[in-house]
Length: 384
Image 1 (cartoon, rainbow, N blue to C red):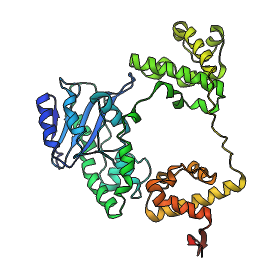
Image 2 (cartoon, one colour):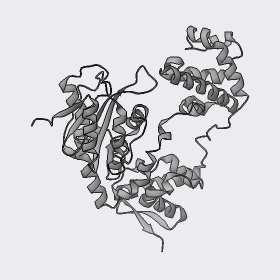
Image 3 (cartoon, rainbow, N blue to C red):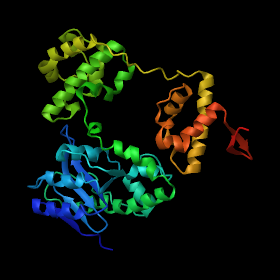
Image 4 (tube, rainbow, N blue to C red):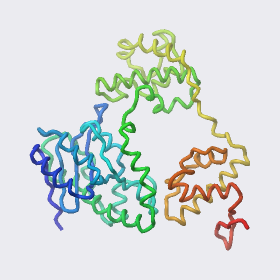
């Protein structure tokens, strides 16, 4: 069976015509190919779009105005379907000036019909369509031109089968009464702020902060904000300026002079010579504004509370299995522990997660429902 032909869009006229045709569709499947190894911002190299009747690949590297795509991306009457949409949304925001809306993410949706959490596209296609996708072009340099016909077909497969997955997922979710569960989650995905890192918040991306004291975290915040701004201005990866572990080590040791700074392992001599004084000033100024954000210790629950969390996790898994939902899509162990501690803000207690299992967990916690072993199987029994 020959694959569907791929329409390669390389002119403004062709893009305008495509947007006009697809704008009449109730939904389209979308994906992107981008490069980011040498840049801070994703370099958009290809935009794949499919309806039920056609497949197109838009070439952003051709002499083309991507603003022409915005009417489709922002059309309230055409749903945009992605798989694991975050990076695609980020790339489209950077290149087209807007995020698509409304959207549907098949990776999230699949968890509500029993597929594993964060399931990859190829695995989902295999599980639901019985098709094994070609993997030989996974490392293609998408910025190289011209793209070979087989590379275009490989890219087109990312929307060819997505357009077949969506109706199956939609109909299955509708039959289970779960389409509405996803409304708030998908609406939140269209907030542009989700895809922009504010320099002042960049420290939260560095794992080392969880082991630092308040003054050290203050230093890390200043260092990370400086690096983020520099990376943005130069359009270079953060790690090319200073790696995360080196930045964390500088914040932890808080050197007071260039000699001490130079003893930080992994700090390049060129960076020390160019930015040494600035780094010392950042450490000094940042430490003077400490951040009391040290996470609570892992053993914050007593032994009795840990046992209770174990019980609630068992109940959560039982409820998830009965509903054919991936347990990890509903809540993590940490979420359950927060419920045990009396917190009310975990996602488990709100929206569709509460309807699916959160209310059940609350009933267990309040004693309104009990877990019993009957004939070797765990069962829930309502009190009274």
